Image (cartoon, rainbow, N blue to C red; front, side):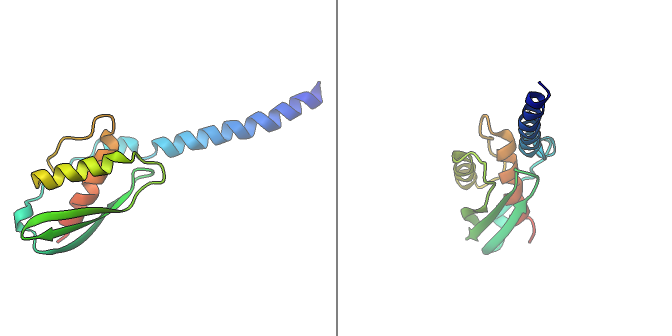
Length: 129
């Protein structure tokens, strides 16, 4: 019976540790990112150019390139995103920003934290100049 307990211990303890580490990975940075305030930037005052910005908090880490032409956002490219991410969220947020020419856009339903992380990366890019 002792041998059986040892075998179970060697199986369940590593599984438990893996589950705990995965949970930490999933939730690290979530609360901080959820509380972010996104400040709208007057895009008409941003000179022509390419701007790189990022936001880094656990799995909510994004790096973006924003191209500004004629005092408008021409394009936004995600340069780096988390390995676990919602595929359609960046496209939806980017489309909304380009259409509205503002960071004051509606967040993607069900992806509030991811939406805010992407918006903060874009804000960091265009407010750095």
